[in-house]
Image (cartoon, one colour):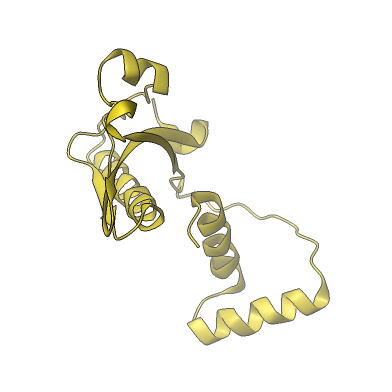
Amino acid sequence: MDLRIERMAHYVGILDGADDTWGVRIPDLAGCHGGGKNPEEAIADATSAVREWIEARLAKRLPLPVPNTIAELLRQGEFDSSAGESAVMIPVLIDSGRPVRANLSLDAGLLAAIDEEASRRGLTRSAFIASAAREKIEGHR
């Protein structure tokens, strides 16, 4: 199934760690994992890793694994909550490569701030808004 066009998907990540070492592995995506010094950093890194994993797979025109549910992964013995592991949802939002025009209504002051920041970063208004939306959807802080 091509998730780029159909919908935004979520894969289950298994969060594990303590103190300053945390990791998230994605059982449905072989070899895909993220890490960080706290759970939030590990989840953000895993989100980026999932995106890269899927983009590489799509570039090779390979099918994407259908995401398992938390219940399915529990039944398969993929994680153990009694051992301190937790399930986290990792969003997947892959560009379709087909831009579409959209009309947005924004406060004039906000639009001016967007334009100023986009210019400072060397981005177009559209690229800046798309980047901000992606960060919000994927849960980056």
